[in-house]
Amino acid sequence: MKITSSILTALAASVLFGAASVAAPKIPANAQKITVTLPQGYSASKRVVQAGKPVALTFFLQSEAGCGNEVMVPAAKWKKTLKVGERATVVYTPKKSGPLTFACGMNHMKGSIVVR
Ligand SMILES: [Cu+2]
Image (cartoon, rainbow, N blue to C red; front, top):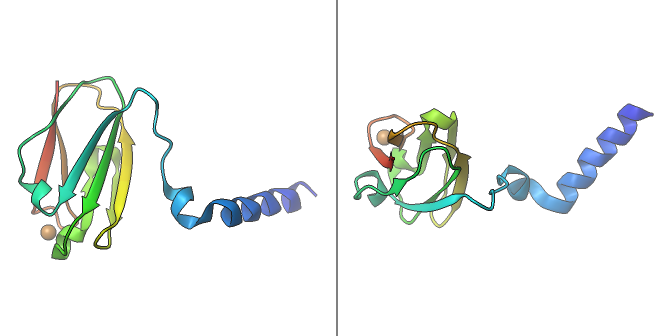
């Protein structure tokens, strides 16, 4: 009975929220919100965030970027393939100062956020 009801709950959740919403992270109220527009964001000037506070890092794929359509944030063990016009957000709390890097799926186009 327990198993049946948890399956039903999971089914109900996927119907209610849909796959896209289920994948969306919960963004803490104190999150530092940064949006990086790709592909130019791989080389754009660096933004600064504070260490020890969550960062909601949103990637927006503005135009076709080849392998850059796939973006990853190694420190957060996160990656996502975007379609043009799509956004995806990763929430990550950097513990110490230094660059928080992101890269294309092949790790050759790279950008970073400065953590202070
Ligand atoms: Cu690449």
